[in-house]
Image 1 (cartoon, rainbow, N blue to C red):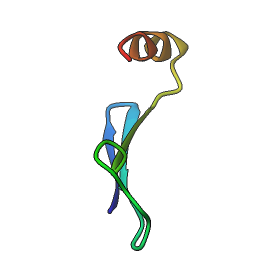
Image 2 (cartoon, rainbow, N blue to C red; image 1 turned 135 degrees about the horizontal axis):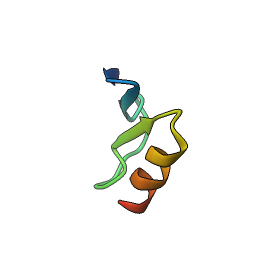
Image 3 (cartoon, helix red, strand yellow; image 1 turned 180 degrees about the vertical axis):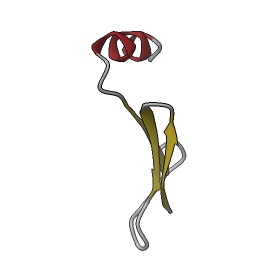
Image 4 (cartoon, rainbow, N blue to C red; image 1 turned 60 degrees about the vertical axis):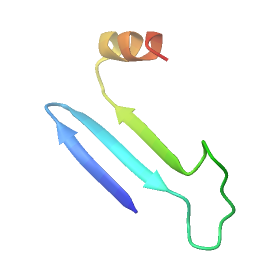
Length: 48
């Protein structure tokens, strides 16, 4: 599964493991937030 959702000026991207790829609890889903605003990047980065 790969998906992109646009929220305002930002994008949320989701992906899971590829068929046949090993996975374990905690690594089977990846979520990425993309923004071109440096201030928003700092805020989002501080939430990690």
